[in-house]
Image 1: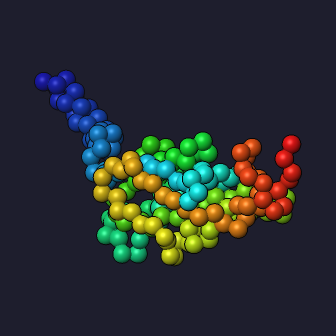
Image 2: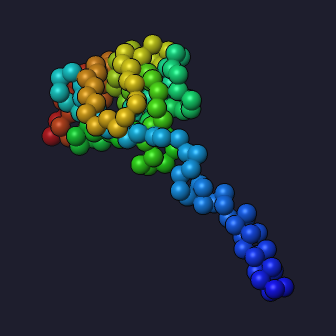
Amino acid sequence: MKFDAMLLRRWMWLLVLFSPCFAVLSGCGGKQMYHVRGKVTYKDGSIPKGTLAIVTFSPAADTTAGVRKGASGAIDPDDGSFEMVTRTPGDGVNPGSYGVTFRVTKDTASGSTPLVNPKFSAPASPQFTVKVDRDITGLNYQIEKGDGAAAVTVGPEAPAGPGAPPGP
């Protein structure tokens, strides 16, 4: 009988010690997050390309979300697609209302040149909003080029503009 009591006590301690781990691994108490994907293009149909090209979701001032964390996603230079991330790739976005902004820049010898119209980069007055309450896969945003976009060559297919190096 003494052996059974000691064994039972050990199992109880193991259960007490590892219960929080089991709860975390099973998702108990975790917040629901949603996968959000979409595409960004300039109004002329071209893809925003730069040294830095990201979409940012900032929690709206009037959001009723329990978790107020922003999210971001890199804009793919090949097709303009993006997938939003809160902390780690694939984790998604917390439910809530968000302001959507865009940052596309090109590093130059004199610093960083914005390639997006500043009105699309202002978190205080976003041009787009989104309510995340489910998985979203079809977001499409059309943004305007900034003044620096014409002056900076971003890729081989970028049109030459004022100050751009001459073509081959």
